[in-house]
Image (cartoon, rainbow, N blue to C red; front, side):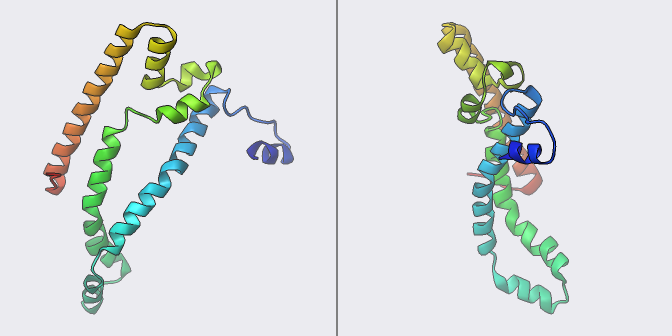
Length: 163
């Protein structure tokens, strides 16, 4: 559909899944589109849990919408923001194996390869199980370190503990 619009405006069709630069952009935009709904639902649920009496009291005290947002909404959303940030940091190295695996091809291996697809090609397709296992283990160790750092930062910056 995008290529039909490009051609309608006089441009050349774009090979989104075959050009490395366009592949990255396509992958990022489709991932944002895929994950946007989950974040929206979580934040809307968190917003509905804010006591309306807080807004009424702030309005009586003379706070405008910006001040209400700054002093009520943002602090109330901080715990869920920290939880989602921690989950995102822990999941940053996964990068959506299923999405990348279904979209990429040999034309974009150099720009579209992630650790998981590299491990898949190395272990399953090339039969180098021991090296693929070592790479996967290293990825898990780095992810664990990132999660621990994010938990520590959440505790220090927002005094928030998960347990």
